Length: 170
Image (cartoon, rainbow, N blue to C red; front, top):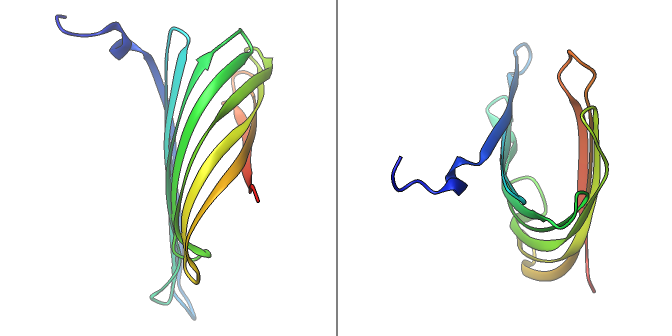
C-alpha cells in the first residue's frame, strides 16, 4: 500500500455492551444503555477511546439521560510505568450540572501485568470545566485517580472492574 503510515497499522481491539429493559403494567418503563471502547497500540503508545450512554423513561417522562465520551493516550516509560494524557466529556440531564469536561495527565503503574491478571493504578493533576444547573460555570483544578483490575481464567471471557475519581483543588 502506498501512502499508509505504519502508525495506521496499530493493533486495535474493541469491546461493547448494549442492554435494555422494558416493562408495562400500571406504568410503562423503558431503560437502554450502551457502551463502546476501542484500544489501539503501536510501539510504546496506547490509545483508548470510549463512549457510554443511558436513557430511561417512566410513563412517558424521562428519568435518565446521560452520555460520556472519553479518551486516553499513554506512553510506556518502562515495562510497568507509563505517562498519560486523558480527556472526558460528560452530559447528564439528571445531575447537578449541564455538562462537564476534564483534561488530566500524570503517571500510571501496572502492579500486576500477566496473561491472567492485570491490575493498574494511575493519577495526576487536571483541569475541569463544568456548567452547573443552579450556579452557572465552574473551573477547577482536580486531582484524578483511577484503578482497574481484570482477570481471565480460560476459556471464559475476562472479568473486569474499574473505577476513577477526582477531587477539586481548593
